[in-house]
Length: 160
Ligand SMILES: [Cu+2]
Figure 1: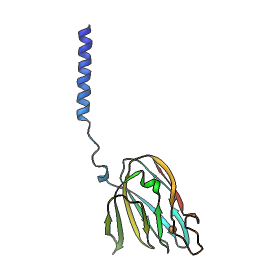
Figure 2 (figure 1 turned 45 degrees about the horizontal axis):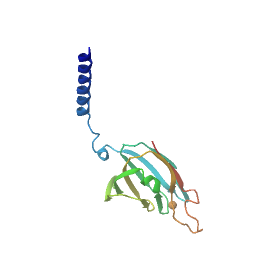
Figure 3 (figure 1 turned 90 degrees about the horizontal axis):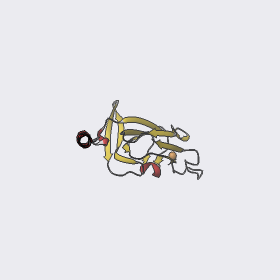
Figure 4 (figure 1 turned 180 degrees about the vertical axis):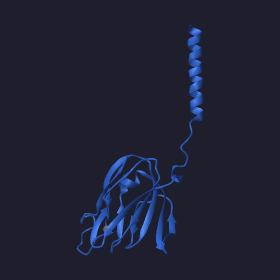
């Protein structure tokens, strides 16, 4: 009876070993097909993020398109967000003859991005930690001496 039990344990251990050797790593998470999300930085005469709430999931690759359709430059600044993600790259793109042309690509940790009127930047990243941050803001000061954030250009980012 004891021999059977110990044999059973041995088989279980062998099965466990087998399972652990066939488990595959997820691979390079930054090389997936990206999920595209667009956020507009302002509208003519209006300082706001649209949408002003963004939601992402850990482990997925996102291409966050920062589009500025307004007449003013705007920042996408969130220190909290940058602590929760791995940046693969940031691209500056421009529409030429109906197709998107990449003008420049930046790699490494990015802290904030400023997009000029009528321009587009793409932030490619993988969220690596969950959290909710409410420090998304545009800190540009307008003629009245107030920041765009004080005019309501703030937002929230949730990573699940
Ligand atoms: Cu702004």
